[in-house]
Image (cartoon, rainbow, N blue to C red):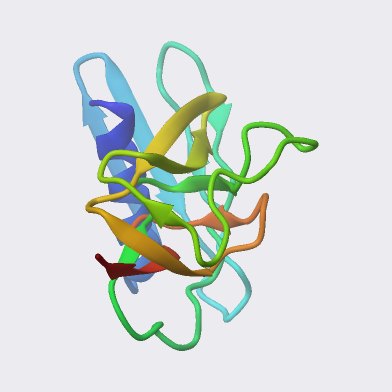
Length: 145
């Protein structure tokens, strides 16, 4: 099972009403659990070879932004810049080209670049730097052209 598949499974589990999920294959085991109460869910990932804990996903935003958005490709931490003291990849009003890096997502100590889907103008940065986001959460709102 790839990391992307695990993150997507975690996001779908977090959004579901199920309280537990167990998945086992020949050389991999995954067990997810969350509290039934309204408290934030705690999610644990436990591969057979090397046990590890995954961070709990942040709650979904209350309102969906208007207009097209670049969304989180995985569950992880959103970073607007390559380092805490570096300039952000993009700012509101910036014109970016298709494929240009607009932010980073960190998951399991791996940094993943998120790219602009088209030539566009950045209208809003929807997440705080360092925020935990779930798969599909809106990160950046843009206007094509």
